[in-house]
Length: 355
Image 1 (tube, one colour):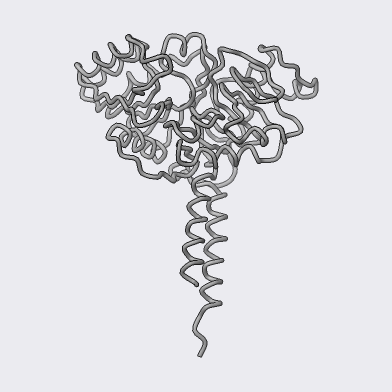
Image 2 (tube, helix red, strand yellow):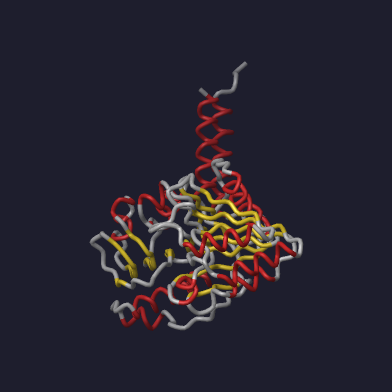
C-alpha cells in the first residue's frame, strides 16, 4: 500500500511540473509585421550553435544567415515540416536544398500531421519562440509575436526538443513551463484558462473539438481576436492573425499551439507558460490593440487601463519572488513539491512498523 501511494505522489509531482508556469525574464517582444525580421540578426550573431524548428521557411534572408553561420563553423540544425497545408512550397524545397549544400543540417520531419513549431535556440543561451513563420507573409503581413528570452537552462531544454525531432526520437518531456504537443499542451492551456480574472486571447484558431471553449466563455469578461473559429464566442475576426497568445492576470501563454484538436493532440507544437507581470501587461495591450483594429468593442474603463502602444522591450527586473533565472523554477513547483513530500512522509509514518 505505501508503495502505491508513493507512486501516485510521484506521478502527481510530474504532472505539477508539466503544467506549472515558470517565472522568466523576457529580453524583448518581436511583433509582426513590425520587427520580427530581427530574428535574422540574432542568427547572424551566433557563435556556436543555431537550432531551428519551423513549419515552413521561405524567407531567403534567414536561409542566407543560416548558411553564413554554418560556413563560419557554427553548428546549424533545421527541422522543417514535411507536411504543409496545400503542400510544401517550391521555394521552401529550394532553400532547404541550398542550406544542405552549404553545411546546414536539414531534416524534413513527417512523423506528425504538421511540425508547426516556431522556435530558434542560439548558442544554447538565447531562445526565440512564438507564432511567426519565417516567410514573407509571416514577417511582412501576419500579426503575431516572438519572445526573445536569454536563459541557458530553457535554451538547452528547447534545443533538446529540436535535436530529438531532427533525429526522430520522441521522449515524454516534462520541462517546467514548456508545453509540447502532443504531450502536455492540453493540461497547460487548461491551466491558464482556468485562472481567475479577465481573459485576453489572440488565437489564430479556436475550435470546439479542442474541448477548451467552455473554459473561455466561463470568464465574465474576455477579449478574443481570432482568424478562424467555429465556436459561439464573442470575438473580433482578423484573417491576418497568426498569434497564439493567452493572458490572465500575470500569467501568459505564448507559442505555436492553437486551440484545436490537431494542434493540441497530434501536431508537434511548442509553447511557454510564463509568470511575468510586465510581459502580461504588454501582451494585454497588444491584444486590445488588435481587437479594436478588428472592430471589437471594449469597455471604456478597460481601454483607459490598457495602453494601446506599450514598448516592445520588457525590462528584466520584473519580479519580486526570489527565483533563479537560470533554474527556471517556479514557486508553484516548489510549493507542490513540498506538499507532496510532506504527504509521502506522513504516509510512511502512518505505515511504520510499531514495536
